[in-house]
Image 1: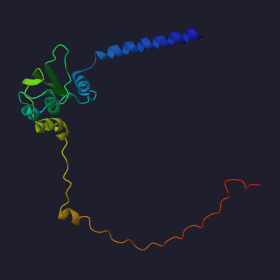
Image 2: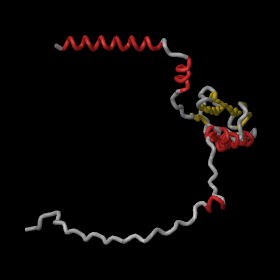
Image 3: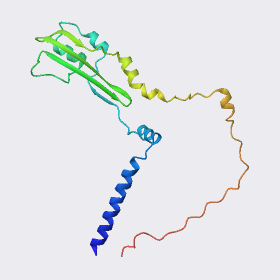
Image 4: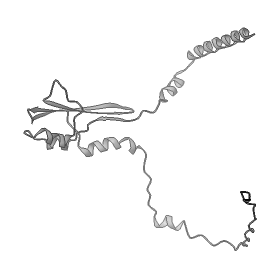
Length: 181
C-alpha cells in the first residue's frame, strides 16, 4: 500500500528534474542578462587600521614606540620574528568596486622610530569622501519653503458649525471580584 505511492513520487521527481534540465537550454540572452543583473546585496567591509596622510606626516624619526602608538594606534600585525617593525593594513571592499588595500610599515631601531615605508595614504577628507561616494547617488531634495510655496498653503477656513453631540452617560458595570463574606 505504501510502495505504489512511493514509486509515483519518485517518478514525479524524475520528471521534474528532467523538465528543469531541459529548460536550462532554452534560456536566451535577455533572460541570462536579467539573471546576471540580479545579485545579492553585499555589505561594505572596512577592516584594519585606517592611517591618514596627516598621521604619517606627524611621525618623525627618533620618536619612542609609545609616541608612535599614540599617533597611529595599536598595529594589527606585530610579528614575533620581526619585533623591530609594526604593520598597519587597511582594506575596503565595496559592491561594484575593486577592493582597495593599503599598507604602512613602521620600522624601529631599538625603541626609537627609524623610518616608515608603505603605500601613499589618503587624507582624512579624501577617505570620508570615498566612504560617502556611494551614498551620494541619491539626490537630496531641497527642504526649504519659498514664499510662493507658502502662499499655496493658506490658513484653513473654519468649517460650518456642526452640532456637538452629548457624551453617552457612563454605564455601571458589576464589580470584577465577588464581595468578601
